[in-house]
Structures are given as structure tokens and as C-alpha cells.
Image (tube, rainbow, N blue to C red; front, top):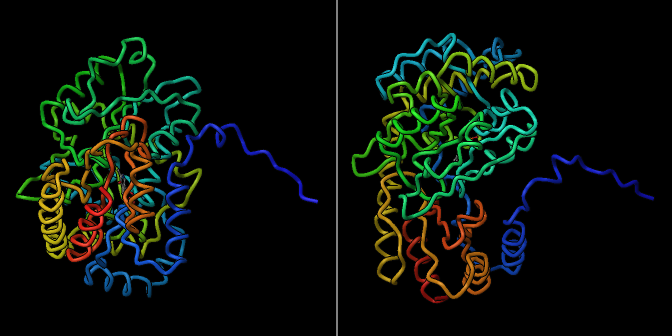
Length: 389
Ligand SMILES: *Cc1c(COP(=O)(O)O)cnc(C)c1O
């Protein structure tokens, strides 16, 4: 006899996982021996630059690194972060109080609401968006208030559309630019509006900058913290995952307002014990010697983007020649819902794309492709899309 254990309300209230059906179908089609092209997951196919791998190999030999790390991270890692932020964004950070290491930025993002949200507090969450903004909010007992990201607003939330009574009850706003899944960019004017809004309503701005380095055509994404006044209200989450093709390594960092950094570190000190120090050592190498090899990786994504977007436009699809991220947010040409279109592409053409509503209801009407396969496979993907449409 099996005993039924009831999961918590916080698990039950999570939104349904819309990729379950796609995953099931994908595995079925792989089992049939079909040649599946997977543009579904935002996980780069390019290996981590070798200089970073060598740094880990060396660091792992050091017995000092076999012991518990500190939750906030080695001061040497946080100093490397501060130096990088100074060179990259022109912002000066105190590594001891304004920087915290993370076990991947997802960890910090998901834990952040635990530091500030009481049951019933609101969190302003972009939709479509990265799921941990919502799940982290729900785990803390907060209420997500969806900020629609719409094409007519260049996929920036309309701050004026947030009712004052919601803004008054909101304690955190999540933002993410360059954006996943829409690949939209934030302007300095938008960030300035966000600072004014956050000050007016006493809201902490959590900016997810996971794609700040994956930029094309000479574009350089700004840090939210460059915005005048942002350091009073903000914390920014960064990741080595996309910047250096290190998704499996689990290392990231956050910097910003020291109160907010300390509150996040307090949560973390009760949940985890920091990132493996050998990986932090490799992270230091990434942030210093890894920048040049990483540039070559962005060039690969840039070429893929150019050929893929041109190819999609040639077959009559609507999408932008994006300037950052490795995602193409393709307008669903109609006839089917996004989920139905994704299902057909998979069943009829063994091609995995992510339906836009998998990132929230305001993602309906779009489908996302990740540029995580080489150019000949992207060409094959275009041919397959054409055959289904
Ligand atoms: C990939 C990604 C991250 C980074 O996650 P890690 O935990 O650092 O690997 C964060 N935010 C968004 C929007 C992402 O797409």
C-alpha cells in the first residue's frame, strides 16, 4: 500500500508547467529515432572557454577550496566582480558590502522575495517572463501582479497602467533587459522612469541582467545601476551562465544597494553555504581573462541571428533583427494557438520551439526560438518551419 503525501499549498499554487506536453512529445519522437532539432531551451551549445576550464582544474587541487565557502563569496571573487563592473559600466562598488556571490542567478532571484515579502505583499512581475520571478514570489507568500510586455510598448512594462493601490502594496519589481523571451532592450529613459516609480512607492527594483553581455552590432546593454538614483532602490542580478557559456557551473552574482545585498545574504546563509570556491576561482579568471574568448562566442550568436532572422523573414514570418540575447521572438502567423503551433512543428517536423504562453499568458501569439544549434541546423529548422506553415 502506498501512502499519499499531500504537497504544500505553495507547491499547489504554482502555475501549470506548459512544457510538460512538449517534453513528452519530444521524447516520444526521439524514441522513434527521428532527428529532432531542439531550439527550445536557452542553453548554449558552445563549450566554456578553455582558459576558464584550466583555472578550475588548477583550483580544484587546492585543499583550501575543499572546505565550506562563505555564503557571500570569497572577497577575491567579489573584488573581481567590482573591477569588472567598474570597467564595464563605470560603477564603483564596495566588494565587501555591495556584492554577493550566487549559485547561479536563478538562486538569488528565487530567494530574493523571502527577504522582503510578507504574506499578501505584491510583487510586480513582467509577463511573459522568466518563471522564478513568479515562483519565488509565491514561495514567499506574495502575490504576483503581472506587468504585460506588449509589442506596442516595445516589450517594456507600462508603469502608468499599474494601479496606485497595487503599487502601494508592492515591495519588489522584477525587470529583465536584455529580455528573455522577447529580446527587447531597455532605454536609459525607461530605467529613469523606473527609478522615479520605485522611489514614489518605496519599491525594490530587482533587475535581472543575465544577457547584458550577449549583445550584437556594437550594442552594449546598460546596467540598471548606471541610472541616477538606481543605487538607492536597486539590486542587479548577473550570471556567468550566458556570458561565458557556463550554465552547468552554477555561478552568478548580484550587486547594488548594500541593505538589499545584506538581506539576500541573510536568507542565503540560512539556506545554502555559498558557491564552491574552485568555481569562484574559475569565475575570477572568467571575469578577467575570459572576456576576449567570450567575445568570439557572441560573434557566433550574432552570425546565427543574422542568418536565422533573414531566413524567417524570407518565409514570411515576423520577427526582429535582435541586438541582444540568443532568442528570436517570432510572431505566430495565426490559425493555431502558440501551443498548437509548437505541437505541430514537433509532430510534423521534429522541431522544438517554445510556445510564448509558456512564459505567461501575455506571451500568447508568439513562439520562441533559441539560437543554440550551428547555422546549417538553423537553416534546416527554417526549412522545417516552412514545410509546416
Ligand atoms: C538563463 C537566465 C538566467 C540565468 O540563470 P543562472 O541561474 O545564472 O544560470 C537568469 N535570468 C534569465 C532571464 C535567464 O534566461
